[in-house]
Amino acid sequence: MRLRIYWIGKTKDPAVALWTAEYLKRISRFAQIAAEEIPARGGANAAEAELLRRVAQHRARLVLLDPAGRRLDSPQFAAYLDRAFAQDGRELALAIGGPDGFSADLRTVAEASISLSPLTFSHELARAMLLEQLYRALALLNHHPYPR
Image (cartoon, rainbow, N blue to C red; front, side, top):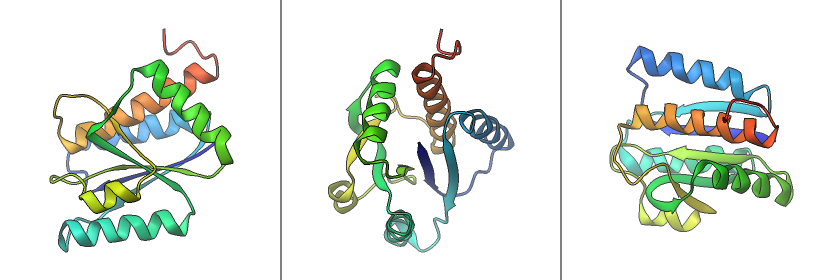
């Protein structure tokens, strides 16, 4: 299992940086994972172009984290990851957008769109939530007691 997490914009909150590091470490027990920040400078179009360039460079399958995406509970998210990894073994790229979300053009290019919640969260908090849910899903798939 190979995962790559992308987010647009800098992490400004030190607490989010700590949570990010902690969950990346935990996830690495179950899967290969990398996280990359995409600079927001140059506007949304430039950031999305850079996101697509990086996804293509790794030949990954792109999944957007988007409030309008498919809503899954934690076990359904784990099952989605299990199916995605079994499909073709390619790296899975999960992307969190900037303040304006993703363009309609990028949504058509992505393999899927998943919602973390119908509520609106800061982009930094969404990063920590995604990583926690990834760890929860991988722990569930690996019969680890964390998800209880």
